Length: 130
Image (cartoon, rainbow, N blue to C red; front, side, top):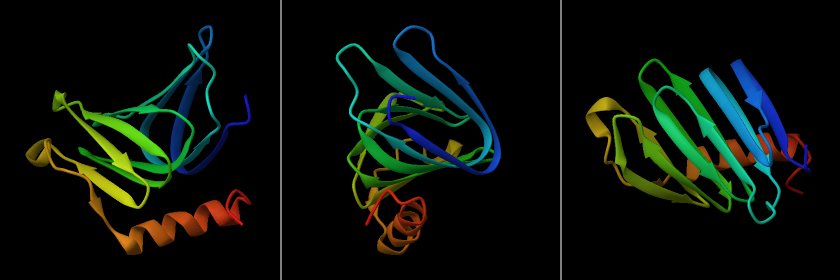
């Protein structure tokens, strides 16, 4: 849809598209997301039990395990909020990752070269990164 690509590595995914919005829900699992640039007024939102992510033209991995959320960004940026502290928003940029847990709701994104390279390899396998 709209040039967006998803690859569910494990788990289950729910997708709805009310109007010009994309709403995804990942109760548990691992999902690779490539979102093309959105038109004015379009929204692409992804929710897990621990993470709320707002996306605008980016490639990232989101993973959800019991009470632990993880985001790793390969291109662009992802705005995240923890369901444990929704007022605490973080921007995760290319090459950064973020863990969301009840005890670390306000953690800052960090650069993790190993996780970035592993996530980037998944997008290369999808043919999205040369």
